[in-house]
Image 1 (tube, rainbow, N blue to C red):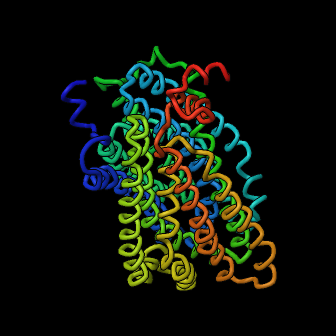
Image 2: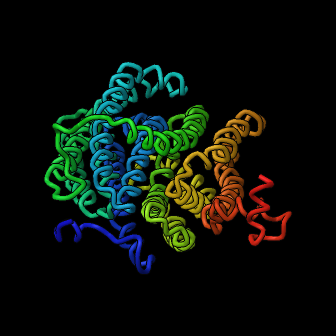
Length: 482
């Protein structure tokens, strides 16, 4: 490996972990925060400069849960690429790393094309199914249809960034995202203020920026000098790699979809309260996103670090990874969450200066979610470690039961009797608490299975054979007994 490559990599299998995990997580957290800032710019521009501010804001925000469903599933699949690449790097199997890279990129292109086609054709049907307010349905459909056209770029970028993260490079994806995001903000102002395109303008600006970030990541991979170098002629799906990526990626994608499906259902319930509650919910969720994105960056670090150490068979380091990532997550949640609770009102006012009710509904949501948000972050860290330990299916069942099933039951029972947003939002913290209890137990079990002393099969067989005869000195008699 060249010195150029080494400078962009992190040695995850040797030495202290805390500093390296912070160095890994920080650019990743900043990438997510920048993305949220640019998404916030969409909402702020719409809220301030659209002739129908509240309706347009609600139209954009009504798509959030559905868009997150698609994005989270694709990111879940990219986690499979990240883990398989991390295992390859940890075990120093560079040929497999190359096969993983080319399989992953081609897979992302195929997935992106399918999502774009289905999404663009079915956008309105999705929104009608989600009971979107008829007052904003047409605008919401315009936004969602255009957004889906950018799906291939978004998915290819996520896979490319996952490959780079597997070797510890989180800085360049941050730079590319920042570049594309600044372009997004400029195009927002151009299309909304000067061209008067309203929600169509912010959607077009978003997909242009997504294609720019995708192009930058692909060019980076093509210019690499090591096992991450992309050769377009080598793009093909190899059986072993696609199976291994699917083993991790599909459970991760399904797991992400559990959260998103439950959130789509909750969004459908919120839509019934009217466009002001929809806009307030979106504003609160957007602000909370800064906390979640920062915590999720640590969870991604847990996945990658655990994956490399699993590949290197240094299993005892995984427990340290879990403990230190948990500590970082709790600190992030308490600091950022406390900041948002203190300054939530002026921050929410930036999104909707013309409608104080939207601000009120945003504060109502954050007051319930933020105090216990760290539990959600710790769940993500545990799940990340289990993925790195090659146990991606293990967290699926508790997440399905505690998040998806529980929230659906909550919406159709408790919320039917007490039809308020407060009761609706309480489903989040209760489901996180149930989930973390089960996940902690599962991690303890599987970590113990992974790290317990291995008894050689030869000794095990001899122990079973010689026991009736008093030990190995009776070797001849034992063999006769067999």
